[in-house]
Length: 226
Image 1: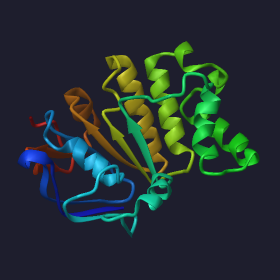
Image 2 (image 1 turned 135 degrees about the vertical axis):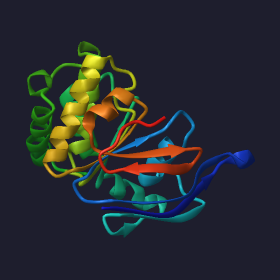
Image 3 (image 1 turned 90 degrees about the vertical axis):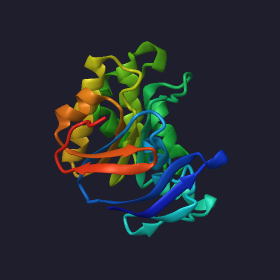
Image 4 (image 1 turned 45 degrees about the vertical axis):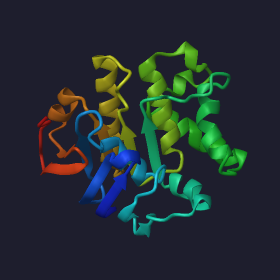
């Protein structure tokens, strides 16, 4: 699913984001990328979704070499990779249904397909009964579920979640992780970028630890080391 070879990203003033990082993630895996603030884990997530470009190395997603992907091809890539960030970025004047539908509308999907897919993904995240509400009428945990629903509309084989529980209390955070586990059971590969020790230790899944731009540990069923 994901092959990364000798990946390097250096910011201004020799600030190293990543240096010579190589890893592979298989289809259907649930992988946690962990590390302290500034370790390089978010840089890795941004490179995987082509939000940033590497200085050196290679990134292959599902057989597609995206290392030097043209800007015009990024929307097509994003339809194959689900993306969930800490910032919900929901449209406040649109209902939950309309927020999720918007991801399909910009891709040029017909209304018939939109009206079929949106209720399905809202049901997966448990919000089918609240689809006509607005973002300010639901909780933070529910808002993050809308974001996850939006990331699923193109049925991605890979979902990258960067600190998806960062703005949530422990109960809502656990609900989001349970939802990601459910999606993983459907066959979607999950890459979870987090600094939440409790969640990582609870998952007992593969853990890749990054520190100062380098992978310092890769545990098959690991724990949060730092």
